[in-house]
Length: 196
Image (cartoon, rainbow, N blue to C red):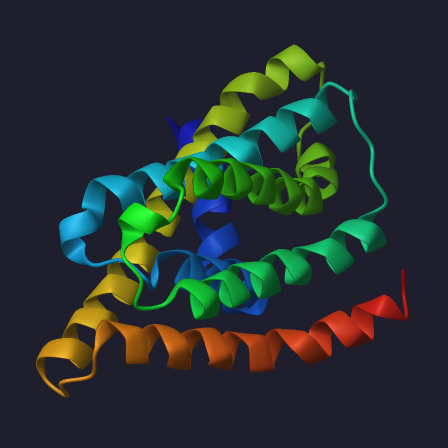
């Protein structure tokens, strides 16, 4: 049980750690266009992201893929930027007009990118054969899923409060949050472009 809890906590704090706020920013722009009534769609998107994250860890642990850390660190903010821009372009439009399949595929791919960023650290904390790392990886993925659901619930709750108490429209909230995230992430992209 303690091994489960150890890797579960690592997954949990991987997302909830404020020093790795890129994860939080990505989740915020991923789900800000949705409301509590869209919980199935939101849960699916978060799960696709976790699956992508876990696939990247599997590929890395089994030495099937290796990508330079600096390249991944450059691409992660771009995934956040693209998601925020997508929100800006689709804000206020009916989700029937948006291809949820495309959003799922892109979310899965972005999960892989984000997972690659963590894979080198994950490999250093685990010793032994790749097969012995499988259960800890599942524990880690569960921690990630729980923390992501926590962040998503907080984002949806904030959105709900802004709509019901302050009477902001969903479109206004999406535009403000997405624009804020773009403002935070652009300097990071510029800084990272010099170290790739």
